[in-house]
Image (tube, rainbow, N blue to C red; front, side):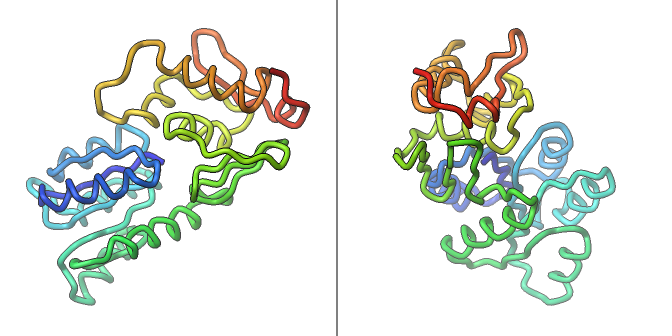
Length: 228
């Protein structure tokens, strides 16, 4: 899952980045309201964690702006503003949840799971099944014909995205965003290497290459026997 963290307390942000990355997430971080708005309108994120008191643009204005433009990225407001009126304003503006500081990281992770489950019928953290493949985002386990393996982070991110969007082409750019976010990417053939390793697990025909575009998880092939 790709998460945008919007937090101007750098010490807190660094702690949150480390702890959220433990759960196989890709994290991007900005400390400025205008940057956050630009990122949400121009790129794809599975979730935004948003402070309210930010340089250049208040968090409430960010939520109002993206909702006016039909951007339905799930948003969890994380702020020191604990007044009930502030909370109601945040939820009425279009935020999906509202958590006040100080907070427990375990609670934030639980809120993330709840919000992403509500976000779609498949839920970002819900168990996914396509053909003979079952992927559990909670622990990174891939099960094929009853045999389970814990995927490395990069393979998990790719397969998670493909299984959430079966039979749809995932562009190279979108998959690389899931892997690296704004961080400097790896070598130019890194994505191909990860896909090669995945094919050894799920079958060569289950993940199709769409030449010049990206990759596609073929649900019919995923339902058949694994072809090495």
